[in-house]
Image (cartoon, rainbow, N blue to C red; front, side, top):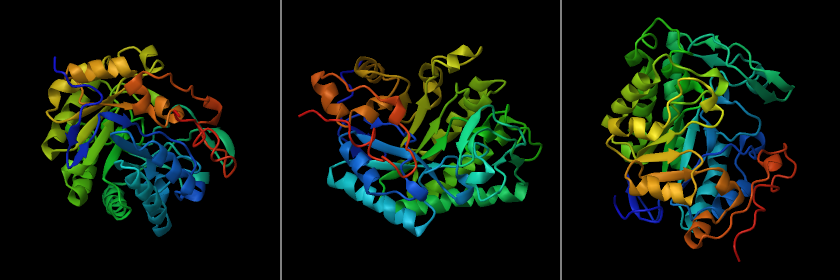
Length: 363
């Protein structure tokens, strides 16, 4: 056991961090019209004492949209909006990565200018979605044609360039939770018979092509990726998740990434038979680089994960929603504010600050 803990400094690829407390990416839906704004800049500035901030999922193209008022990184206006955010975080002494995201089939034509959502295979996700037309059952997507896939890889490549222009310190790829990258990887959602389907090597091809495209922009030392091997969101499943994710994680090792961000199963995930638990201990042996772990950690469990060297950093989601000064509160064992779940997500263009930038910090 080492003496390291949440407050130990660490070199994360090309970035030196003052602590190992990561603000996890969290969907907050305050980007009215898909454009980051001053309120978002204040939200992230308030939380700049995190060793690293990873932003909410951010669209790489208009066809990647899955939620109303999610931000994008494909237009000049969006790039300019994110520049305001990164400036605010840097002026407060923080580091911030942009999470690049394609929702795949977790979408609806009303969010895509009438176009049908896409996926590796025409398999309907399990669940519902809030849309401009109200709450709907998610529909069956259109299977991508082989010739279209290269174009989506290029969208990630261009989004990575745009993130650099916007002043970010790096990027994280969203490869979790049943979105497009995850859909290609797992055999429960990928029934293709071409070079992107069938064997685990083929199913991991899209993930690895996207990683390579983004690393061409940033270099591996400023790129992370988020994976959720035990995720059951939207009906996700794989016939052999240990083999699938072990292969993917081993292949990621060759890119010398800043980190791999692994999600432990949620309480809902654990209701499904065969879910891998714990994720961290299962996959740590397959990756030689830095790992960020996430899964309802508190200060004590976070310190334990880092001291045991199973994880190198710990990301916190809900605690950062309600506690903009979470590292300070951890440092002095101060009580934490409770999350008001009724205000986690935005209400269109109304009350954007409520439950977002109005949580009190310690005096």
